[in-house]
Image 1 (cartoon, rainbow, N blue to C red):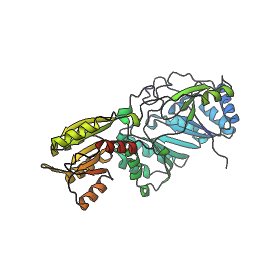
Image 2 (cartoon, one colour):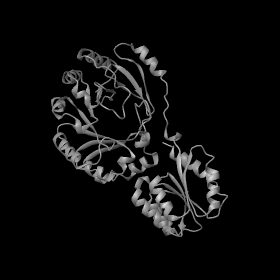
Image 3 (cartoon, rainbow, N blue to C red):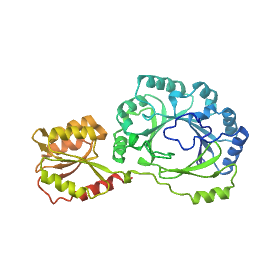
Image 4 (cartoon, rainbow, N blue to C red):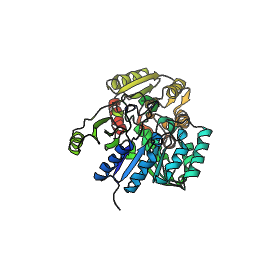
Length: 399
């Protein structure tokens, strides 16, 4: 079987749409049917045998049906990616569905809040199309989606899906990082989401694929509506040429010399730390040591159990140095209760205690999905807290 060589094509861009994650190329003009057929011929000469038409706007391109027919005549496999299923025009989709080999739909909680209306629409959509075309599902995983992961999996498992593809949120195509804090999910949380999926419940889903376990490491190309070629990775994108105006040599040269644009990555984001102990001397030792690290942000210091509990729920630190037993709150009870409430948002704990029973330690490891990082003996002021943070950050930032 001939290996697939795929190109993504943003055929039409709706200039009036507020594209929250793809702002950069809203002002590109669309081409005539003759020009777009010429692009297909050029792609075939480069060995391309599959085109992924991305975004619902392709359905609104006046000659989309004719272009699909032309592609199929040239033995091009056609995939349509619907990024806004709830607002897609099914009448237009029905006109072209016979020329679509793969229909990929975007289902996540970036665009849609969990609602009965949406899931009813989703059910109707799958029951109508699942026997007409191969359906894939694409989900960009955010911390908002993780909160509803069980219900999302339950909903998807009833439909006939060839491949469910997941990818940790990354602000691709952004000209600024405006949405990182709103949607970002840490690598640890993403991995735990992936491993928490109950594969036995996905009986109607043939394949479950995580893209490089967190990010897209290789570059990929998208043809824009004006024939510009954008080269992208998880950091940014640049234009390396125009497929209609530039020759192959110029495009190849620009591709080889493409710049690596930098936006803030997880490695550059700080570790939010809470220090929780009734021992003032210990609190000061930990604070003095770890605040020397540029990537550490101390979100607070609490001195009793209830304040600690409330602060963890409110500020959601990534790591907690936790006195195991306060007078007003047992550490075991606190951690198990937080695990139920916070799920994948639960911080990593460094337990400060002289003694922990094997049963309690095992219970916490199971309840927190192994988020007990280390055990620090109470009064041990020689503990190398800096090394704890360094080791954790190295683990967190590893793909």
